[in-house]
Image (cartoon, rainbow, N blue to C red; front, side, top):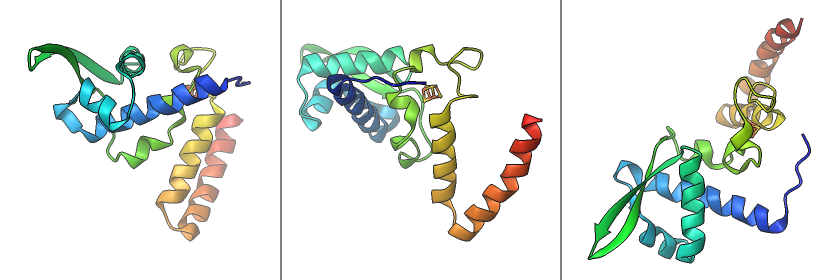
Length: 148
Ligand code: SF4
């Protein structure tokens, strides 16, 4: 799966990830867009583009609310990870193929090398080195058997 991402697109993907992380950190109560743009020093135009992007991906909800006599949006996470660290490096957040990815599609998490690498790395990082090596050795015969 070749990835051709321009510097501008790369920056946008990185910012999308940062916005999502900040929304999640504010928890189930959500956060006003204007507060978030101040925290991240984003213009409201750029911030809104990123928020809309996350909304389209089903990761946040945008509710129009009146705050101090001005209309704004409140962003609330739709998916709360168990730990914020668990999604920081998740490849799906910044994946250029995310909108085309599904279990039955040509682009699928079932065959995605990035998600595969990420899961293995997270698994290794979450346990001691000895167990990680044993654990991966235990998983290997299962994976091999499935391919037969
Ligand atoms: S599973 Fe892979 S292809 Fe699909 S969105 Fe995640 S990183 Fe992208």
